[in-house]
Length: 265
Image (cartoon, rainbow, N blue to C red; front, side):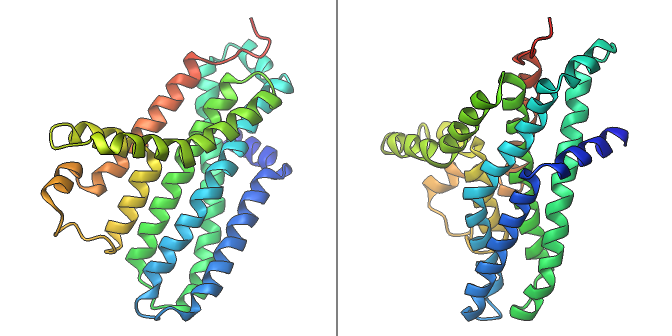
């Protein structure tokens, strides 16, 4: 609890958390205003998908900066050196750091979206189940990129290096990965489509978007072709936790094994 309070004081003093939260607020209100013309009985799910798709371009980048700077700050202020000289292992420190950053950012965004639920009820027929699906998808997106940001903060030596790593990572997930998938798509056939789908759904942006649309009933799974059934060999409700677990575990373990010591021998 003490470590969480420490993280809250550090994050609340900086501009990153408030910038991310205010950006989410502006986007949510703007899209809600633009969605007023949608049919009230059918527009709620469309609004949630539009809101998520807009968040995909901004929240990963913002969460990368928030979480990675939380780690690099410990190196620059030499607090990491003090912590580790007190016989605490880097794994223990990094686990506490991860819990603190994840808990605070998740709670802040949860508070906002619960507050946003009130005006949603006046604009649309509010479906609680759809709202929970959106929250689950959005928070999974936030948690995954928080963890990747913590990893980048762990392996980088200084802020300039970290800024470049954050931008490159964001660009890789938003643009480069899709270009790579488009390049290999013509070579996909019935023999290799399962292997292709494993790689495809390890991309969190693909998995989360697919889960959101299917869970909201906007992409029915009942009328897929035989090839698509081989592509979606696991229900989306299982793909989401698997993707989350893979990225959390991979990012955490690599953070420990590849860390830059920041002057600590």
